[in-house]
Amino acid sequence: MLEVTPWWGALLLPVVLALFAIAAASFDSVLATGRGAVAEPLRATAGLLVQQRRRTLAADSLLWRGGAVALLVAGIMAALVIPLGSWVVSDFSVGVVWFNTMEVVAWAAVWLVGWGANSAFGLIGGYRFIAQGLAYELPHMFALITAALGAGSLRVADIVAAQHDLWFVVWMPVAFAVYLMSVLGMAFFRPFDHAVSGDAAGGVLAELSGVDRLVFVAGRWLLLTSGAAMAVPLFLGGGQGPLLPGWLWSVLKTAAVLGFLVWVSRRGPTVRMERFHEIAWIVLIPATLVQALVVSIVVIW
Amino acid sequence: MAQVLFWLCAIAAVVTGIAVFRVDSMARATFALLASFIFTAVTVLLLDLAYLGVLVILMMIMEMVIMAVFMIMFMMNPAGLMPMTMVHNQKGSLAIAVGTFVVLATGVLLVPWPGSDRARPDDPTMQLGEALMGSKMLVMIVLGLALFATMVATVVLATHRGRYDRYGDRLDRKRPDDPVPGGIGR
Image 1 (tube, rainbow over the protein chains, first blue to last red):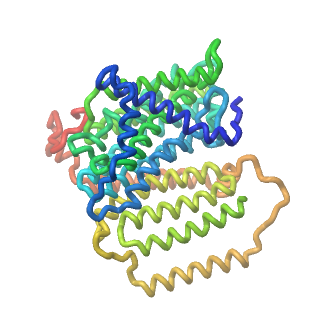
Image 2 (cartoon, each protein chain N blue to C red):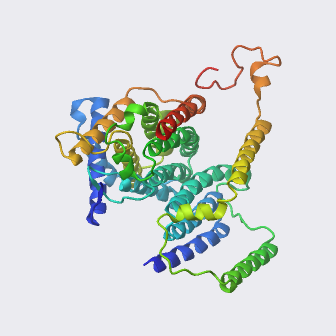
Image 3 (cartoon, rainbow over the protein chains, first blue to last red):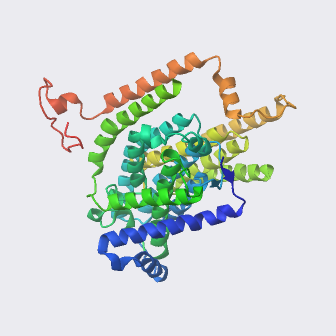
């Protein structure tokens, strides 16, 4: 059902992702400061491009810069298996696992950026993100597994095809909700932005400036975009829909999910990790397990 | 193409593996080890074992990040601001490492590996799984349960505060007495 694009599809993918990410960032600034701030992300990008790099004493530059680049690369690579309508860059047989792996790169990347600056605030942010990862990752994996279970395959094309009659969101609402929440968690957007929150002077972001900061923040937005885009084939029927062509449905659904996530992240306060941990392990993991059990019973029936 | 990729990854895996013992910072040593594992995982991917290869990358990233936390917590000179060495008992470990390598390498060259003209199966991961533990599935399942029970038991034994600290000696406290309250007020 899905057709793999020629090689230039891989070149086009970062561009499409970046357009989504810039639109989302614009929407975010509009929500934050009003309609005049539409072009704020572009202005901030230009500013960061000409800003001089801040240096810190005895920084581990290799790990510091490497972490930021890893986050950016992971945000793009995660989208390799996400279809746009019926086009996909790579129809990998274990697409869901690939997507999950690229997200987990964020664990290493954020910690490295926090560590590399040799700054106490950055390090606090890095450790906070690892704690956060331990909280959101298991419910997130169970949500992914539930969608794969419903289709009986780890291939994204099969998951989309299995939703021909009924979108997975209808009979996997818990998995869908947990998935959206963990996307905010993995891209450390509020309410899960403890790793970069103001109480630690910006945490991981504290010492980042210039191009380094641009790469890291862009990676963060691309990760959020990839996560939002993956929700469409996993739970919202991919490019399926009446009248309009498939690619347009994919774009519309992705924009809706991304816009919703940005709006939600502007609505609440930062959640402290010791609070989120208890919620994740005592409420979310059992909830996703029950959801997976219900889905497996339905599938076997 | 696959040959070139294999040799690139094999050499890179060995080089980053050596780097683990050459760098002078715990963070760098941990992530050099992670790089070595990822290069090894790519060689697994070259065998068409897609699931296993990607899973190795996934697990190793999570594992190494957690390990970095503990290594930095417990090892000397965490930040690498002073010279440190990852090598202890240098001569002994060198002898063991070279000996192991020689034994394994001669094994690779001397064992008569079975060949086959048949095409590769559609799902090599499935075939490998069946070959490894098809007849031993019951043992594996029991073993998995035993391992999981061991992990739970270890955590229970190691935890600083148990339920008697939280709910009182007679477990009669309505709300737990926690230094840091959790998210659901239980």
